[in-house]
Length: 191
Image (tube, rainbow, N blue to C red):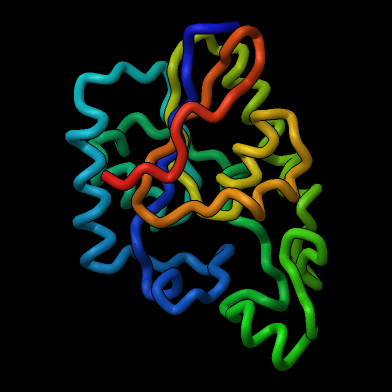
């Protein structure tokens, strides 16, 4: 099981990530800055051989894979779509807490009409199982919250641990195996 890595690439900046709005299934593009950030991934990934390239089917993830030079190899996976925020789609945490649900926390409360942390974990667990059996490096292009859950589940922790591992737009992270234990090798690395 040792000797391979799963790289995680969070999509570049969007208008909604700038304004801290929860962006689940709303299919918005990268900003011009987000496109530039995505292009910075290409040199960081140059020469690395990925056995599989997976991506959320949403535009912002695909534009990031394109900027990285890997869009043509990307397998689209619905399991990698961002957290379903239900009634809270497009809203900010501050706005939700002030106007809808005082004290609300995504990681423990989930979203009315959307997903709970366990729902997101069930989706990413299927992808993790595939990638662990792959026997080679892979890369995943996706979104902030789903990738934070992915990392928590990779290291065999509850999905709510994702609350404690911040992830900026346009960053790379690497997961691996050390002494038969899943580990986070690098996290939230800007390019």
